[in-house]
Length: 112
Image (cartoon, rainbow, N blue to C red; front, top):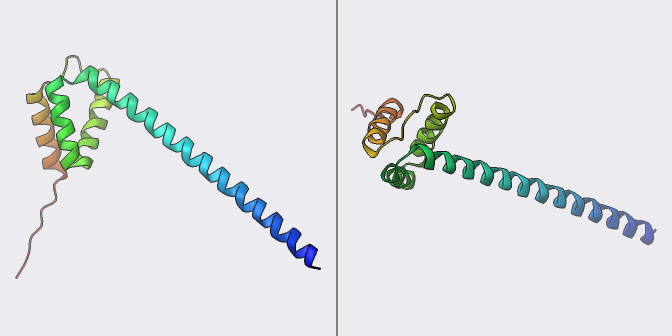
């Protein structure tokens, strides 16, 4: 009886360890894929943005990460569609940021 209980515990422990190992592998794979995508994104940003524009986008990312990510994704889509023919300067990036910010900014009103 006690041996059966120990055997059941041992099997449950092995099952849990196996599940944990599978979850860990899946998480590591997901992290690896995210890192690869981020590296690809940064490589494209280096191709299409001037150094000043990249610096600005990095600073924006610190303050408004969701806006920076949105701009990056839009720029990548335009680049992949062949619509970006020359490098984007800091001035152009400022205009792009302003346009996207104006579209996504929510206005709050407080009524009394």
